[in-house]
Every structure is written in C-alpha cells, then in structure tokens.
Amino acid sequence: MRVLPIPCLSDNYAYLLIDPETNEAAIVDPSEPEPVLQAVAENLGRNGDLKVVAIFATHHHHDHVGGNEEVATRLGIKKVYGYASDNGRIPRQSEFLEEGSTFTLGSLQVRILAIPGHTLGAIAYVVTREPSDPVVFTGDTLFVGGCGRIFEGDPPMMHASLQKLAHLEPRTQVYCGHEYTESNLRFATHVEPSNQAVRRAIESARKRREAGLPTVPSTIGDELAFNPFLRANSPEIRSTLGIEPVASGAEALGAIRRAKDSFK
Image 1 (cartoon, rainbow, N blue to C red):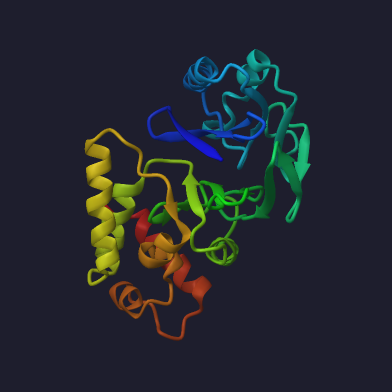
Image 2 (image 1 turned 90 degrees about the vertical axis):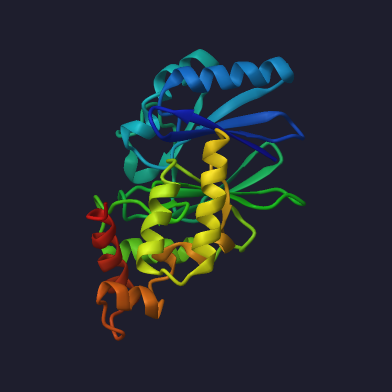
C-alpha cells in the first residue's frame, strides 16, 4: 500500500491512502480542501486510473473534517467513514463504525479501534495488506512522541486507548494528525533524560524537518521506546514528575499529560 502525507493548515496532516492493486484510494482527515485536491490531482497525473472512493475521519474536530464537504463534492465521494457516536458532527458521514468494525478498500483490509480520550468518538484505522507493514491512522490520540490533549474523555480512558494501540504489531507504521514531533520529544527528554532512544529520535526528527520532510511515520515499536505516554511505568519518568511508584498506569498517564500541558 502507499500512504502520502498531505500537509494542511499550519501543522495538520491529511493522508492519501492508495491500494496499488486496484488503484482505489481514500483520504484520511481532509482538514482543508485545496492541498488535498492538489495531491489527488498530482497522483491522477501519474496514475490516471486512481479512484478516490472514501474519506476516513478519525474524529469530529474541524481541523480534521473541515474539507469533507468540498472534497466529497469535487471528487464524487459517497462513503465518509466515522465513529457511530459522531453522527451529526462529521460532515457527509455515511458509514457509522464501532469497535471492531471491518471493511475493505480495494485489496486493503481495514479494522477499527475505538480510542476515546481526546474525543469520545476518536477511532484508529488499522490497514493491512501482506506483505506490506501494517499501517494505523491515529488522528489526535497518538502522536510521534506524544498524545493528544484530553478534551472529552478522562485519563483512564486515554490510557486504555493508548494501551490498545501499544498492543499492535511493533512494525505497524503510525500516521498521526499533526506535526508535533520535535515539541513532543523535547518533553520526552525532560521527563526521561537518560533514554537514548529519545535522543536518537530527536536527531532524526530535526534532520527530517530541516530537509522539509515530515516526521511521520514512526512505528509502534518506536513509540514504545521513546513516547512517554506509552511509558507511564518508567521509574525515571515517575521520579521526574513526582508520581508515586504505586500509582496506576492511568494515574501516571494523567500526571504526564498535565505536565505536558504546561511544558514550555
């Protein structure tokens, strides 16, 4: 499968997901129409039989679905996927998904994980096609080196959602909703300064940004090595933030999130 990041707004990513066997494609989180339509036009130019047949929404926030109406109209897209509880909050939504829902995009298999916390209707799209590495679109729940703010859920809910993502295959490629990587990794260094995986990730992210490249994708294996929100049991993180060793993972996650909210 092919995944093309599309920079939108100031730091968002939409994605063009293409099945190379059938040339069917979907757009993930088209926050604004113009960059998305341009990316589609460029790929139509390279591959004239590309068929964009769906929009995948990870959650209802406007900076992820603001382009739905125009993109669907201009490209003749009929299927707009989102979580069932987001009915009425995702423009043009026609498909109402639940935990464990499955469907296909050409030869690609798509499975849904409900990952509430950032919003109550947040979902991840896990896409597989052998022999390619699995791919997951995580929206604003899991970022490279970070996680989203907790707006509609609570720390136990976010912790459970992140753990669900953490149990995906380590080789799963992670495509998230924003380019927050350098900021996230500065915080990771602050809370776990001895973690060499964080330092390597920062250097890689800086080089990529200096070259004008996105820092996505990472992998689930990468995130387990350096993302503090997947490392809530780290003794060093707990010591840095004054989290009791006996605190639950959810309690630690809440403390880490509060620390990140005020980190400069």
